[in-house]
Image 1 (cartoon, helix red, strand yellow):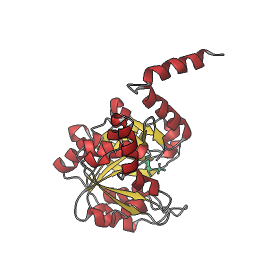
Image 2 (cartoon, rainbow, N blue to C red; image 1 turned 30 degrees about the vertical axis):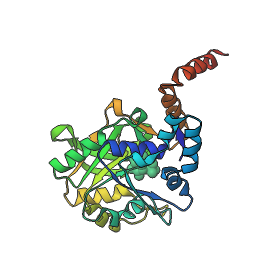
Image 3 (tube, helix red, strand yellow; image 1 turned 90 degrees about the vertical axis):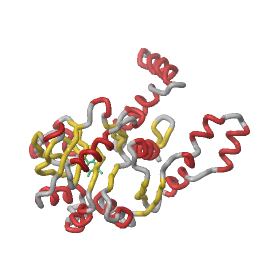
Image 4 (cartoon, rainbow, N blue to C red; image 1 turned 45 degrees about the horizontal axis):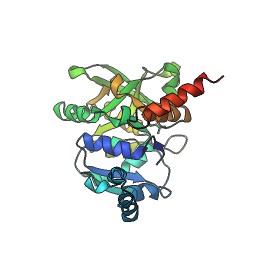
Length: 268
Ligand code: G1P
């Protein structure tokens, strides 16, 4: 629920998915995250107040009823890692492919990215078992991400041969980091059940994808173009930077903020 400029991050992720044609959305939350459900619910009192104060433009922004989304919720009961969270979506997915979007990443300024659509197209046309989005990161940052080993493939994508979760720079097979968006066949759930928890007790999604590679399944990667770069909200430095960049691009308040920042920066 952390806001970036005008909206909580989860709303950007939801809007990105909708714009990419994903309308059935399961939010995997936890016991301390009821604010997410409240946010996407109708708030008649707030709507009444905004409308009575002639703030209809704000009222429309808090009305999620008009979105095409069918939102469902489930909880991860223990903090057992990303892989365990994804397993919570197994019965929701059933026999269908699923997109997984991590809530600590926004793709593109104001979430304007069609990467997920391209990933879905590729998943279907190449009959893949998994497609991941990747981005180039400086070598010293590989320790924060899942990193792929890949070779150039057809259709501008990469064939993933192996993956390692958070390698030290000297062990990283490349500087291509998994960027928080995945498309999976339901096979991923079988792989996840085979993954052993790591030293922190976490089931890593990366390890399950690795099993797909080992089984000879087709795992592809798509590089994010600079215009759809990933905004990482998972640490203070990049959260601050993201907030400022989004606020500077705000059509109503961006200019004012720019002038203010310029004054601040020019003050010794
Ligand atoms: C998770 C994944 C990692 C991926 C990253 C992207 O890590 O495990 O493979 O590169 O998200 O944000 P986390 O950020 O949860 O530590």
